[in-house]
Image (cartoon, rainbow, N blue to C red):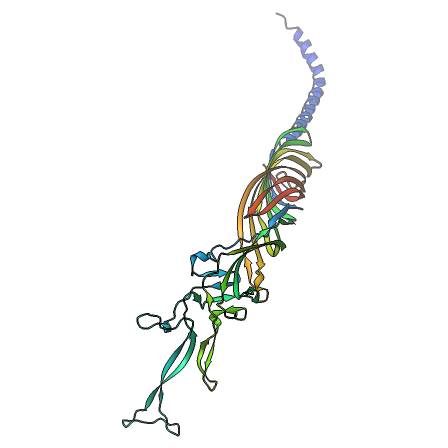
Length: 447
């Protein structure tokens, strides 16, 4: 084997080597640029895919409530028993008739009634006083004690108990006295004639929670994903006013047994004045009874009278509650600058609503017009209702990123839902959440 080609190969290598070094350097620079670009592109893709937003939302319109079939005040059937029940306590909207019994002063030691029915009885009081001389000084006994004497004075003059009549009754107005000398006692009710009132809920504020997950990035500054969220807003609509209704009267008639009716308003518990002696001195405080006895049982059956438009109902009606809104739909986000982004979403929504319907209605008892006003009211009646409604939503938001994880957002929101009905007795309310737009804002966190 000969080694003569080796010097020639070495010389050729020394000639080529300076040319290979610049080529290698150029190759390394190109690779670095490529790697940096790849890393930059990768950095744009590997951003957090999940985002949570927490904030507020204010809607321009919280819906509308229509209150219907207003003006229904029911009879209190426990007030006045039918005449067939005999002598029992009966209470009316314009008076009362209660049972009567003999008083203690009308009975002997064995409990027997000793007064004369239809008459009067006297009550006497015995007092022990000192015997005085002509100078007004006490007269003394031989043992030095004062001489006394018992003095009996009439201190009461009262009506006697009379079976079939009562001294315990009251009535409100002179209009209750009939031409044939009886007293009409009534209980009243009212039924609706279809009156209604509407009320807009107005602006309503609430809280908002939203979760967004990015599914893909079709372009360097465009992302799309899915959004789900929940928000809470209140419902509060109340109205007050007057409506016309049909007046219903249940009337019983009581005999005065030929006596003139006492001046109205009248209450037999107040029919007592001071008893005076012949000199005009008071000998018995509230010792003279002026009661006019009344029959203790109605004459005949109860009379029913219906008067369309005869009652003016003054009322307050309110729907109060809240609803949770659930929404889900696709979302699109575009990055306008390194810090500003714009996102939009539209989709399906559901609302779980819960409300309380409160009613307070009252009207003036007709027969008390010339007496101290007597009103009839139902107090406060309430019912609760919960419904799930379907609808849709749309959001458009502008987001500013403080850093790669945290940002602030503000934007517009819109929604539309159906309505539902709620009742209190025969009264109705239509709660229509309807269409509304508003503003939302808060903070967002990416992870």
